[in-house]
Image (cartoon, rainbow, N blue to C red):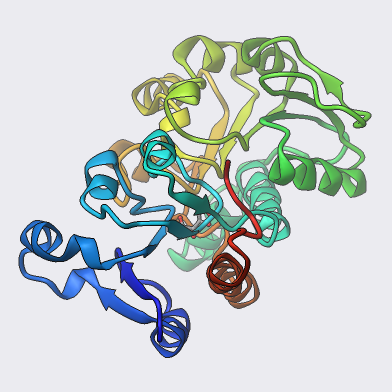
Length: 313
Ligand code: 8YV
């Protein structure tokens, strides 16, 4: 007999097909009245498949009284109420590690883009400014500069390693110093920003890091400093960021995530020294396939052995 699972939100077609083949899975999005459906039939489900974007809040989890396991697509799990899951004895897994390289690649690409003006140069050529002999502004060199990393987890370390080829000096700030790394620890996020030429945000989202990139931190980053965010929009006080960019109190920003995504403020869209991307840190065939496989193998492992491969707690 196949295990009865609920799917919260759409997933990649290949993953949806495999879930349908392996499980008795019900797509909640097909319900006209999801709350009514959960009230009537929530008891049926022992597993939930969701994603970092959609998550599962406390009310959602309690509407599934027989739930045993949540397998989530994505490394971030701030949208899942872990305390509620724990209270109900529900095991939760995410998809860490398989996306480290992919997200770190993009972070570095964004860093080079905003410093060297790759997206800007592309727009410049396409709109005919080169032909019209418009002066080409000089950019900022990347090699040899100071790279500050906010959050030296698995992704942060993959970003730090990429700096070797660019001969950059790396420091980081995390909740606490990380053992067995050679990069210097900065005592605070503001101290790190003060030192850095490029500040890459790679910490987890959620209430603990909300607006860690504050007006004061941006002030410390300064008019020659660049902000790169591949973590969560919530980490950056976006109003403060827009104000700092508008007043040229920082040099530029490259953002893959936003406070209110998919909405991006008109101010950010109008700035030439801002690179904007649609939350695609893990968005390659290779990585999304690996994430999907980990969603499946976590479920298989849980139902076979009672243990998840990559539990979040
Ligand atoms: C996901 C992400 O693509 O892994 C995460 O936490 O933010 C992305 O890699 C996406 O959020 C999955 O829903």
